[in-house]
Image (cartoon, helix red, strand yellow):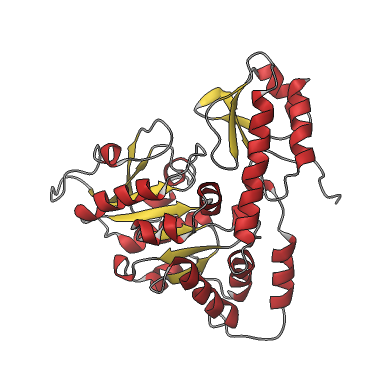
Length: 344
């Protein structure tokens, strides 16, 4: 089979594996070590997680992002618990009901103008505490960055954490692109999570150049129960966990996450700048660019012209709006070629 050469702007999931991650996997592929997390790579990742998120952090490597989200929320909530989130949140729009069907958790969704919850918006569904006729809203979940490419600031997260904690709720961060937000804002990963009052984090990996590795980081240990057992029940306990942890180490121990995120953000900024200068009728940025996602409105004939060379698609909620995603291996030449294709 011939390897595909066409660059995609459909999703950062379409990119391959970062060479440094492949090297880490090769290095881990030596000898016999205990299975199910009893290996040196997993022990080291726990140390790295505490360096990044604080001394109380507990790390649980898992296999995919949906599993991380379901596991984190299921461990934090009782059977009668519900999750308040933006309607556009990944856990609501893109996980085929997994939090509800697998996790047994009701989603209470809120319309937002930019993908971000605020205390005022969350209050629309955070009510009915003690009412036996209503699923109890016991968690807020936010996507960082959001599905609309916007970033929560530390102050915005702190406001949500305070809102949640005042009501006995936990704050979960779906951090599949957490690194992009940190690079954009020039802050640490802890500043967007632990220091801002978050309780639980789904830490991204696959969208940032890993073969297939994510993690649940419990930032406040008292926020969850039964994580080891639930990880197994939810099919997220890898027997050869060293290969999951080796990937996470490659990304988070030496700063690769920051370099990759800064690069993808820079490519998105280059793309956005070029689109703003295209002067093609009907082509315009749909919103400011804050991460590696660029949302563009354009006539379908313009999109079709570019899609002859590059893969991307319309945003489901707006047929004339398209999402262009940059990945860790997107180059300036890729961006310029896409701009030329749009220009015609």
